[in-house]
Image (cartoon, rainbow over all chains, first blue to last red; front, side, top):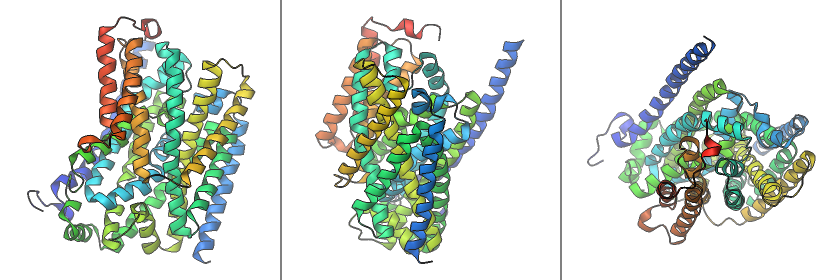
Length: 49
Length: 475
């Protein structure tokens, strides 16, 4: 595998990054849902006040 | 129980269940809004799972496997960007705004949204025709995936696989409308997910694990494990954008945002859709590893069915088989309901001013579903290309026509009527011409089509003055 760093599972880094990106996206979705839920709660709290 | 009997029994139970859902949901369908978008009361789990089922379908399971077989592990990037752009960001960027604006305009279809947001009757007619024509091409690709699966796993002729699966969908969609589509989609996503997990574990067992599989692929050709590898950047990038960004302009996917209950459902729907979508890597990986086991397949669309047939135990095959059929059916049903909405509500009722009562509109939609479905089945009996190639063709045309006016219509109040018309026609003509010219520079027609439609919409809107400020005021 010329010019590409071989990593876990004998996979070149350029391909392994696809797996890493997949996992990071799932984590990002969970974090986004929590943050935007809190923001919506604050917004509705301010609206009531 | 012998394998074919096991498959057929499981399939028969599943088919009966689908038809029952069609009849049960028919009772909850009282208006055309219920028929087309489920009365805007669908929850997070059902919306997101049916989104995933409609997105990934047999096109990704069979077609994605074929691309994995042909181009190797670089196709894992297609799955990764699918999840990022096509699931997570699509829900974040489009979800809330689409729900709010379509409710505000009382729009239940994409052509309806364009007509009300931009106040251009032409947009309704043009988009309806494009959707009807090119979703049929998409239908053909879905049915081809179903036919191939039936052929390899049940050894029944391709033709009968297409006819049987197509007809069952026609029955439950025609009766139950959108409610049947989302509820069956929800169940189908669960079956599909179970089938994919079984496929992954059995594939890894057959190849001796991930490391051994990558080593074996590398021995065949280094380009099969590297990115962009033998596919090259233009091809890889084109497909990534089509199947990830294309979703943003596909009416059957956007319908999930019209119909979802509230903002809380959108938030949790985003998480469920992202987690469910992450399974998309399985068909690409399995397709790539299929090359080790079957190096000389004449039809790459048979890579996944061959792996399943060879390496999975009968019960797992039966579950996977029903999962693929479920995946294809969920997408086919989603597309049918969009086609009938475009044809009956947008073309006949709104554009040609044919008077239709609510009941009559539902009846006409049922009939249209039947007609569009039957045409798709007939065309799928002799399909002109690979599953993913046909999908990319239809998605490129529809996204080039709809994506820019839809996305900018949600976020920018500077759009003008002239800009929208130029963008729709320009995007359509450029993407179609590019593909008819044989995709110069190895670039798929999606990229020039979508890029030109965004460019035309922004530039022409800046240069012209017929803004649609009234429709957007106060938002």
